[in-house]
Length: 197
Image (cartoon, rainbow, N blue to C red; front, side, top):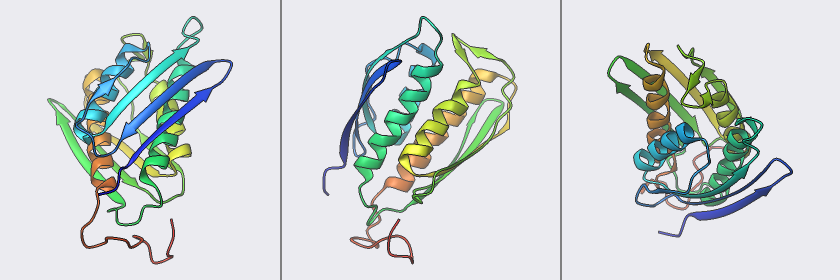
């Protein structure tokens, strides 16, 4: 199996972020964003996706978390695009349903090359920890735009906002893991009748 890793740095007047990922890792997250609830969610992505994520993040948190969260999504998306390569031999599609007590979320992903986010989530609280729940949309929008994926996120039920978010990120990790996995029946072939993605 070829190494599927990438390191990306994004440096702006608002943030400086470096993300290194290994798609075939052990599920380890290292580093902190400064947005502690987001770190908790990214730990779920790493663990359930069996993806190693190392991040070094410096952002203008004295203003608010918006730029840091959005730019981390962008940088993570760029790293995924680099690590996945030309997509030959992968399953391409992934999906997961994840429950946590009363909450249930579904995430479906397609490494289509066409960015699209379709997110149907009504959080029951406006803030989790120090994180505005509106920023989850910004994170995922940044990710899909730069990873080149189609992503559907649906929170099907739940009244505890922490549980809503956690089921989304766990399902996201598991859907990524499924879609990025190497399909032994598709070795060396493009998972598309078009011949490219």
